[in-house]
Image (cartoon, rainbow, N blue to C red):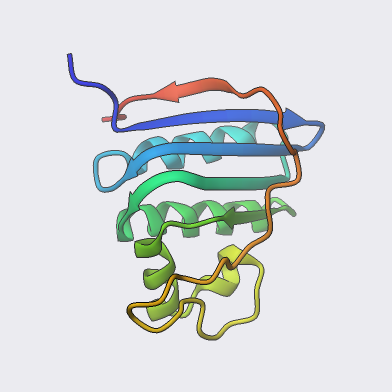
Length: 141
């Protein structure tokens, strides 16, 4: 049995959640991201911080899942912020001009010129060093 390409960890503190993703986010794993973020809203969470430190790759499927979740969170009166996006996602956010929706920074260039290390566009998640519990793993079909 192959290992899951994406693992989702969640830590709640009142109406705030820290979601830590580990692995790759693409067409196959984006539904898992979407389901995890929707579950937060169903559970009454209104502030969602997504730590992407352990994500090695995220394509436009992942971006779509994050944008959808951001829209749903806003409608519910909350906020969703991405922290430490991988280089590919930072580039996609820069090219599409939608980083301000997900990173909480003014619109404009989010990445450094090619060949330079990408800028760190978001602050560390607010929960510090807390034990995380795996809530979902694998592919959702």
